[in-house]
Amino acid sequence: MGCGPDNPHGLLLEVYRSADSVYADVTFDERHIGASGLAHGGAVAAACDDVLGFTLWIAGTPAVTRSLTVEYLQPVPLHRPHRIIAHVSAREGRALHVAATGTCEGATRFTATAVFIVVDTSHFAAHGDISGFGEILEQFSRRGGDHTP
Picture (tube, rainbow, N blue to C red):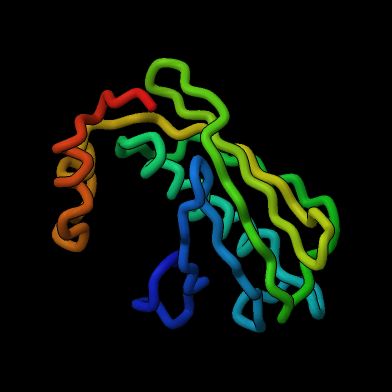
């Protein structure tokens, strides 16, 4: 739904790392419409959740979203690029606290915070289909699920 080209109805995000942050540019279009000319809040939240999830590469561990809060500060127009930048703000035991900002044309349009809970890679085998993960989970397994940044 969020990143990659495999879902033509998804957000098609390409996420990059810069030091201790990750970022992606997203341009919402008619597939993501809420009010006329504006992105639906659910599409904005999905983009935030996906980019925030990429902070797990910085933390060096697999984890799952426990909570996500999005603050909609200004309307999010369609057909204009929005940059979402995310970072890990704190770690408390298994809880990773992450934060993001979404800007367009120099204005912060939305912010997001989330808590991710560190899980062992066996979590995904027990609760999902890991065949599509390729080597991603293996890389986390080699690094260890309890890695502290």
